[in-house]
Length: 342
Image (tube, rainbow, N blue to C red; front, side, top):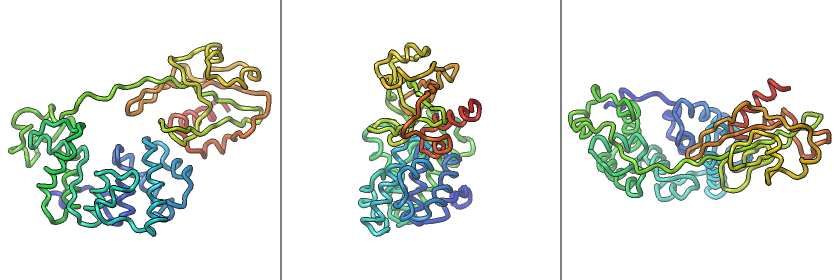
């Protein structure tokens, strides 16, 4: 069997324990394997059981997740651990129908746990599977359309059979990752090339298809790095359902365009009133806006130094700042800011 002879050795493949499989699948969603592995190790070290994860504080989970992005995954991970621990007595559901009811668990993750841990014949469909099946069978249905999952999952399930579904799913994803690559597939070495529609009809770079992408939005962030004489800093937690929910950040003025002068910043309607009368000259820290790209947004970020003569209440020392769960762009800023400026 190809998979048995060629599969890569990954830590998460060493166990069929539902908690570990679930943890790996959540971490690896929208994450490269090389990037996800250190996070998987750190999470298992910090939270070796679902109970340990459930009893952790959300800030601890978010801090450990810092840098992976898509922070709703971390919040859902924590919420599901709490549910499994408190409502299910620490035992994961053992059917696809009950697994998919867990918060943050979609068709892909439920299918992976069901097939790998419980030998349930549910087909896993990820980017690798979409790509291989689309090319091999010449399927032109856009993979981001509403009907794609049902169509591709049925195709994969037809190929799966009833035995060793977990192995089949992992083999199909592994083959897609190693051979049927997005831009430079190894068609010459591919054992399926002779029957591959895309290869024989010169459609390799046309498949899989996608509908028009979601428009990218530009946003302009001005972070106010407010400190007092003891080098304590203001910090607040983001609320609402937008990006970086429940992560910490410096006071923020979001503008409609890039602001490069202190006078214009102070004039902005969202500039805090309590700072206008008490601050020294405001200094722009970065020479040009820092560009931070998210899935459907591009952020243009400026950091402004504001030093006060008065004492800040509810403030944070440098050491405590570094222990907070913050967006990676703020973490990178703080590391440079404190090493260069202080």
